[in-house]
Image 1 (cartoon, rainbow, N blue to C red):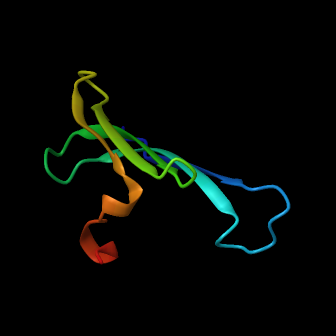
Image 2: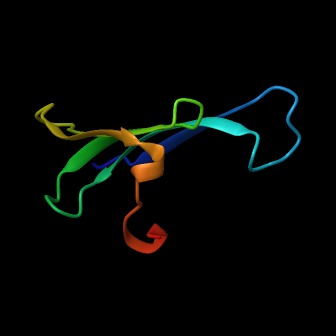
Length: 85
């Protein structure tokens, strides 16, 4: 059995009305099948707009092995796939 899920949380700056500009932090936890290995992996992604930082960590759920652990400045980060700039 393969359970897949995604939990997302956005933290808004108090007092801001704008839908897009008010978000300062985004955190996402998910579990899905890796396209590269075919195994189930857990993902933690954090976008910190106040600290101008992007981090992504992929962990194999069976072995606990860290497959990827990236931390970079948000202005240097480029998405992959359809979200590329």
